[in-house]
Length: 260
Image (cartoon, rainbow, N blue to C red):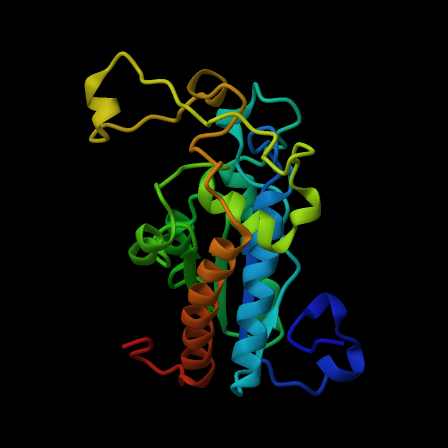
């Protein structure tokens, strides 16, 4: 039994453990090029969350990892077979209900660990602010958490199922990464199409990108330089940073000026 993972923990332990922080991993069910499994975002969230909570627990933090939500917002992948969508409003209600559960059990600090780019939770944090005693925090691990180190580990930045995610896949769920007999990835190059609007291509006007038009096989980013070692290097950074934050959060007192 790992007491920092709720799904593995029993009531004998939970009823006497004074958890201070809960971590809610958010995944998705969607295709990732031709080589990565549909559960890639979910597997990543579980791998990052479990290791970060373990490291924090071993440093004295009373943290508990909730079961990963395996569905995300997939409206832009609606034409990609068996992308399983939950609308933003549905996801928001699920999280709100879980926040109410945590509040009822006296856990007043929650980190949402998001592993899917289609999930946008900042509006939800604003909506719930002042309506619950639970203090909400959000980490999109693929954005700010690792932005400064990606360029030192990987050859190129990518968007979806490229070098970063494939490296994590090879390191932590390699048995599910499709490869040819010679060991090369069974993937295309992850090329993406440009729109006919320069402002959108330049990034200063945004749209919800229809994935079946943007990509060939749902990959956005070249995966072929990926290695398991790169995935382990990135994980080491993420676990160190997240576990330190969880320790700080666990030990922080909630008062009238929290978190300031």
